[in-house]
Image (cartoon, rainbow, N blue to C red; front, side, top):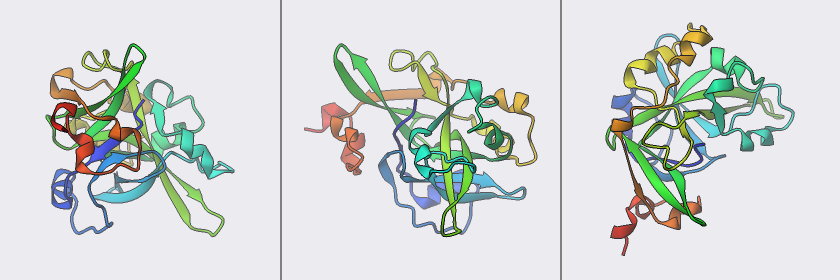
Length: 225
């Protein structure tokens, strides 16, 4: 499960990391990205990487009500070829969802403590994502996406039994390639990330509310007061 993440890097860092130039989507750094919000994604049109703003929560093209996306923020890697909601996007509409951290809640007794998890260490990385288009009543197109999850690696097992798929940088081009439709090969890219490249620390319960979107949200609890 991945239900919150961060993208606090500035536009120059984002452009450099994902080989993008000259875009202006009005993006501002975010410390607490939540489902149904717009997120930055990277797609490839066959010639170059392109940034797109998409709503987090995938709405299949055949859906009658876009609210279905509210509960489709994640897609399990193990069942992508089986689920009607995801199998076409898995073959034809894959994206990167850039981040520099994600939140998970660690259960300790009756308490659930929010943890901020980073990778690489603390730099930009990319979740493996799927995207879809849905035609709205006014004729415009709604772009939506979901983050793919896999089983937890050794680092994550004490926190949760699932984790988002973080793609090694050398896998990103293959994942984005619109000509690649070999789902068996693509599935081999969706592995738990290297535990040795991940870190995490407890943050305050400020993160529990998506309304809280400021730098203090990502601070370790011991340094807040």
